[in-house]
Length: 83
Image (tube, rainbow, N blue to C red):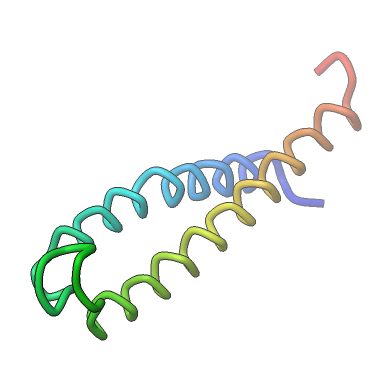
């Protein structure tokens, strides 16, 4: 079983990733290096794809970590009623 402190750490880490990475994604889309020409009207470059994979992976792991943390906190609530 995951300790309550560790569960909260997972929740905080998950929330951090879910909040930060979309903002980073917007910055990448707005970056001139991501496109061959005008954003969304030209071919995405390697810069775009590398960061898209990075962001997708980080977001996926962030959501997984958040879910594990929330489930661990819920298990503490169920296993120790009245606490």
